[in-house]
Length: 330
Image (cartoon, rainbow, N blue to C red):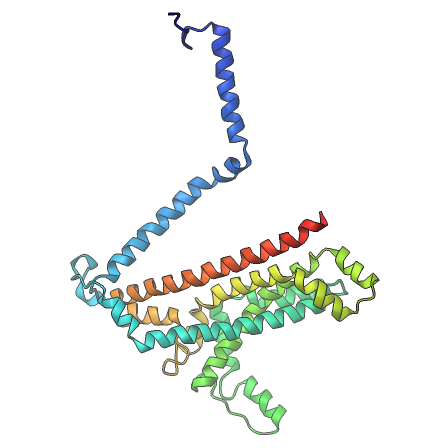
């Protein structure tokens, strides 16, 4: 039986050719688009996973304890099982803070989307002084929340400029206690958020309108469509992905709001402006109920994960619909 020569016994020319072939194979594998796309992300993903995994595991463990800051270090706290989760799910203050936060986010984000979209429609085309206008209008977004809270606290005091303006408009003396009445305090927080973050939605919509392809709009105009018909049947459908992005980004941020209600009203009067973030902060650092706050935050993580998953699915559906509309045009 004849034995085939192995690689080590192969002639030098054949071995070198085999090595070059293996190198070319590895090089071709590395040049694949999916490999080139994923390999640079692996170290970053591992780092993010390590940074997230440790705090998350610690939060889960602390939520199963009965630990208060007044009882010493958390390693000496007694095990409480799921009692903190049961307490959170039966706590009306916690449940109402969820409803209050979602109501606040829905009100503020709806107003910001409408205002931002309307202003973008007025200003996305070139006109004299457009750059100056855009710069001035984007300034509120750059101001730190401490300054926003201070400015609005001065604006909304009982004898402040807003009540004075309302008195001049109505012809009667108006003395709304914006920061000490239940509903007025909630409106004040929403107004402050709208003032600061409408520029963000405005910026997203201006970018989206400026990037629309001109061909469908010109074709509709040549066919005799009015400005309203061009907007309703051409521009608005093309802007759907942009609108969804603005909605998702602002909703995620609005659900986490802490600074403005804390600076304006400190969650009051009563619990009128106590959002989820303020609720967690108060239980953990004011009432020292760290394990209870950890259990509530885990429940919120599950709730927000469902919202984020639904948002991503919505964005994917809009993207798939947009790509499907583009296929016949190719």
